Image (cartoon, rainbow, N blue to C red):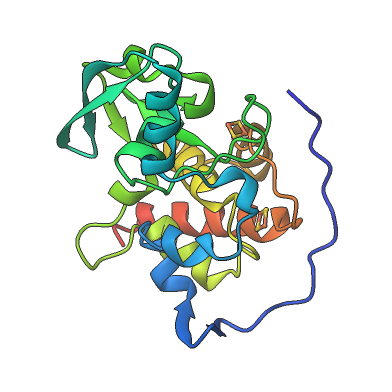
Length: 220
Ligand code: FES
Ligand code: FES
């Protein structure tokens, strides 16, 4: 795992920004489906549509096999190659784009999801190995229109800049608080040590997790 270096928090952005004429809000992003809004800011190299992937595979004569994935309580049937990662199956085949593919080699944590309650890097997990497991992504955190306390705290504490690392941080934070509802600041830092934020929002993230823990203890 690459060392994580903390940086000074960048200048604060406004809570809501106009992006190409579309209202872009942190709240919308944090509902998980907000990945679509972020897509516009993503390096094109990591974004390949499912149709493009399927067409490329067909041209290469690549064989695929059906798998059934349980994602956020919903069953999905999808065709994947043996080499298809869970991250690619979620993003390219199922259009569940909360998990982000940044390093694609188990170093940054942006693709973090829970599988049977344990955190995994979805870029390092084969889709076929995820069959029969319960997969939870950031899209499953909110309860309808009600954001998870962690999502509320990330908004309140300005714990994201570009937001690319945020789904991974949220999933790691949820696992942390599920296991320990009263973490110390050091335990929060340790619990999130598998996640890297290139924008340097660490102090805000740690503050948000402490705040969410307090809210959750109060039943909020
Ligand atoms: S994209 Fe999976 S760990 Fe970085
Ligand atoms: S907010 Fe940009 S990488 Fe973390």
